[in-house]
Length: 275
Image 1 (spheres, rainbow, N blue to C red):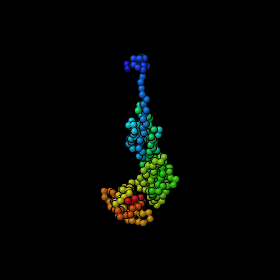
Image 2 (cartoon, rainbow, N blue to C red; image 1 turned 180 degrees about the vertical axis):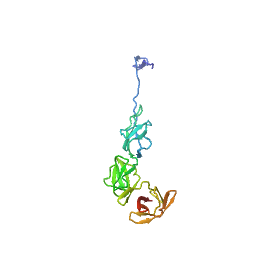
Image 3 (cartoon, rainbow, N blue to C red; image 1 turned 135 degrees about the horizontal axis):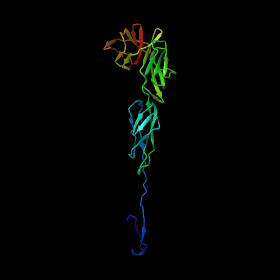
Image 4 (tube, rainbow, N blue to C red; image 1 turned 60 degrees about the vertical axis):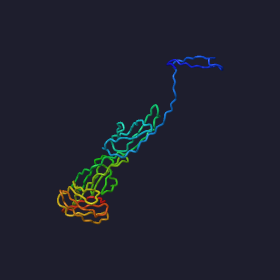
């Protein structure tokens, strides 16, 4: 065939090749074949929970076609840059993986995955110390649940909590179905008619297995005891080294204890979990 001019020969004879032979000419003929596009399937693994403030995370969906995946989200909790997702708000977010196809493959059915962006661990600030009414304030404006000695306080879901009972207070934040890590505990004590905050006293590790360490306490410890949930007292001895007190608790049974520190005429409770 020559471009723009095709010749086709027809033989109408029955006894010889020359009988009835004719020549036809066609302009601008185009020849093509129908191509059946192949299907493709996207695999998009589940996305593990993240915490607000984490580094951007890479999405790793793939298609049976081997073609590049595109990602999108209508949530205001994340922004997408290629396959990298940056968390901007706490809560449940959804990312959709798509593949538009090409001259060999049909578009793939989009696949979506949702995951939790957990709120950042909250912090507690304290006001009204050495008064009869201490106010605790969570760093989170909403979604708070307050705890006393590890137990949720019914109805205590505001950003602030007015306290009139001694104990160990903490707070957790929830957005959608996504939970933060529980805050560090704040220990409050009753001294006569006043409540005061143990501003710097911490015990670690917590949970503890063999030894516990106490820092942020000024002056000597008169006595210390670990009281279990049945009310049984287990006296322990703290030793001071480099401004940090330590005590051996390896003989205690696993469980939850209240560590009572006695200094002069003041007592300080701290919650300790023994592994």
